[in-house]
Image 1: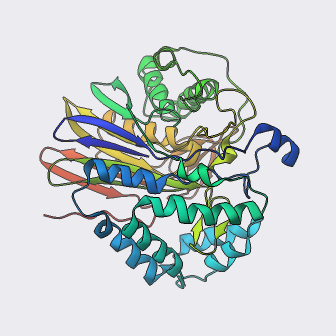
Image 2 (image 1 turned 30 degrees about the horizontal axis):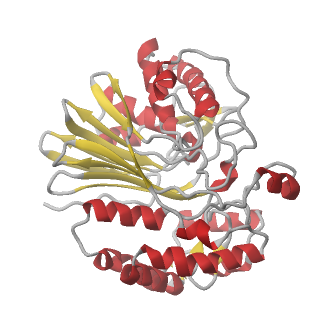
Length: 428
């Protein structure tokens, strides 16, 4: 998914490249195979990968380079192999905690500072560059279908060939004199806007030990509304204005919120265009299934479907999606673009970063470096510099990896979170 600020039109646009469920992945099948609970990993946890077509559609709309040239650095990076950093090493060790296919183990079981061999993936990306996305949704899609179905999956070839991304209007609200744009459904982005509206309505104290308690009450309310309404808007009516105007409701019984395996990036070019983009397999290594010929590791986004309600599983439906990103305007001009890893935690993280900048006057470096607290649906945990009597984790802890660009006068200030391995780069 990506939020785009178009300098020529002065508008913010949104592309949804999230995938849809196989046509034959039905509630009846899940009841038969797993007792009615969506499996977290494995062949029934996968939706059609949407990123290739989503990225290509974004390029068709705004790209200035040749498609093949655009993909060449990715081909070269995959050919060179991916070095295993300490953070990646920890994630790789976690694969052993759940079932997965042998190909995933063979691909990623590499020690620290070794290189993951991605030659087959390099060839796949090169072929996508030469032939366009049709190569992925035909040849690669056929291979994925055959491989996943051999393990009990239910893909058909037309699940891939019929796939299309969607251009949608982003959501937005006014908050403290600025305009905040968030990702629309099937994304959970509206949750961020609900949190911000309630912070402003209650005039919450943003300093001191009472902040944590008040924020958690707001989080519970916002997530309850999210789960009551949000799904694929092609299949369920979502009253956006009603949701954004809704006041306190009874809280739903929430399960623990999960983090995710996410990469976000924020880019601003010399002409003033901005892209705040985010992509993810969902949990680390997604479904834990890697198609061997083309070396594509598959997502586990279908695991977020429910058996009833607005996020009910159905053929070619997109699940409620954790991914979202933000662009903020002040006086009609870009002020901030940001994204962060974090799965279901993301609305909390977005609200925290935005209040740090908008309300507390921090710059983007201070806002991202500031210690964080999160609510996982059952308890609150916080980095050890947070002033609250909650479970503490070491700072900087596993509370998401943010990347952002702040626009200050005529300067672009980019920053990458100290909690991750990213870096901010720019040209003068």
